[in-house]
Image (cartoon, rainbow, N blue to C red; front, side, top):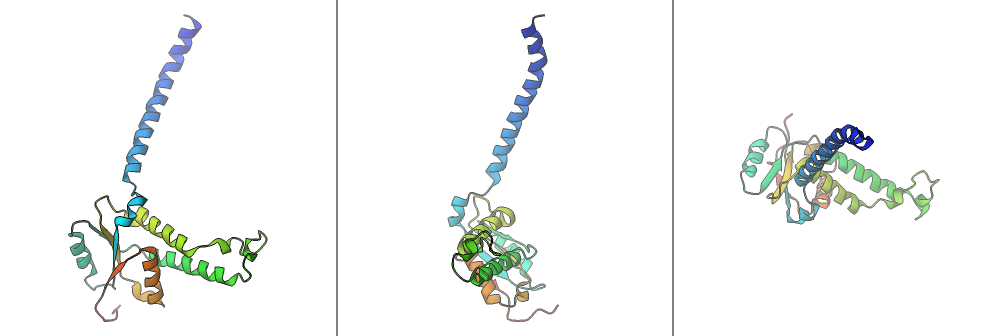
Length: 183
C-alpha cells in the first residue's frame, strides 16, 4: 500500500465526519437565525400594555386581545421592565451628578464612562432586548405587549409610564377600573 493510499484511508473518514458536522451546524445556525425578529421590522409594531393588579380580569383581557389577528400580548414577566427602569433612572441620575462636563471621561474618575450614557440609546436597547427575549413577535405580529399586575408598586407611576413610552414609542395602556388592589 502506498503512503498516499494509507493516508487517504486514515484521513478520509474523520474528514468526512468533520464536513458533515460542519454542514449540520451551518443548517442549525440558519434555522436559529430565521427565528430571530428582524430589528428593521420594529417600525411596523404597535405596543399595548395592560396596567392592572391581581384578580382584576387581566388574564381574560389578555386572552381576548390574543384573538385579534396580528396581536401578541404576553403575560406577566416578573417585573423585567421595572428592573430596566431602575437601571435607566440610576444611570441618568449618575450622569447628572458628575459635575464638570468631561470630568468622567478621565480614566481615573470614579464614574469613568458615565458621561457617555445616553438614555435614548439605552431605551432603544431595552426595546430590542424585550422584543428579542420576552415578547418575541412573529413576522405577522402587528401589536405586541404584556400585562403586569404590579404597576401599583411604583412610587412614581407617571415617570415609569413615561419610561415605557420612551422604550416603546406610541405605547398604549389599558387601565384597570379606578379601584385599589385588595391584596
